[in-house]
Length: 451
Ligand code: ATP
Image (cartoon, rainbow, N blue to C red):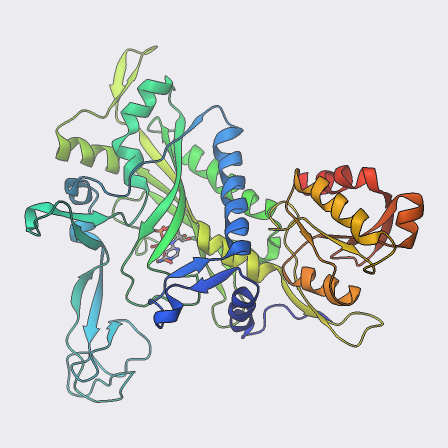
């Protein structure tokens, strides 16, 4: 009865997301901007709920992690120290006929780029693909009024460097002792050559990153700890455990600075299949050592009880807010038949804690005091959680409109409600209806969204 991950789920999700106000293409009226997306009224709530849940679990509920909000624009030397100026590159080929650009390892390219028999996957011409060139993925811009190279700055391609350069500021201000972490959520920008798959790979996106500073020698223990914690967090969002798995980076895949790395992958279904949504990396002392070298400032930690100094090792957890949002959308998307009804329904089965709207409130019909009682209840509840009031059309249609945007509960006020003060609460997933006293509805919903 239930179809989940058929190949065109993404296509149907893109259309649902636009129609119901989750996600729109950026600058759509101008024909759109390549792989940049805007979050509409429901999308902004969904993504914010995911970010809030991350912040709550990583910062608010822990006494060993501090929050930070570093600026996007940083000193250009930061990106030399981090290795991004020289190393954040993808090999790129260009077609001299149609001017399209491709990653050199694009499977659609037939033949060796640069040779006469290589064929452009877009226009089909032979011999027009250039030999691969290294293309830096960082966006460059100019700081100050004069466009000379001295003023070149970059839009950060990751949030982590803002944490490293503030390591001592945060440590000294918060008086944290190692092991401790610094977490932040923020925008990152990458001029990806082959972006796509909706919000999976975009040129502007949000990262939720945490850098955990530890004593050398204890790093693998913390690495194992964070791997497990992070997997559990994804499960706590309601992602089906069988759609999550670890992928260990082999020696060839490991970044030059990494001592060990695992991706957490989610099964997006269809042609995408399992793909990375989060990286957990043991970065050793690479980042702090490099920033010491390039800035000339000491970034070591003074271990008071043992009266010694050392540069801490770093275990990083790095997850995309947008990619997690896509995983949540794909995970929750169902098209199914409804027993006893001709029309099927589309459901976004979000965990109640992250659903953008928690409850729909409906008068069964537009008379006999029902709209008055329903709108009073809706405005009482709105003080506690997002509520959608709807009095138009058949009740079945109103239920279906809420199912489609993932609202976990629908509260209906009928003739009985007006006489005895009870209402029905319909559960999105089981379709069961329960009669609940109207003054208890608030707690009924709150208990279930807190889980
Ligand atoms: P990929 O191999 O998919 O390009 P990556 O290994 O370069 O990703 P990291 O640099 O480890 O990714 O970034 C951590 C997380 O940031 C990723 O797991 C992903 O969720 C998110 N992310 C990275 N690049 C993008 C992007 N272009 N669009 C959306 N999210 C991204």
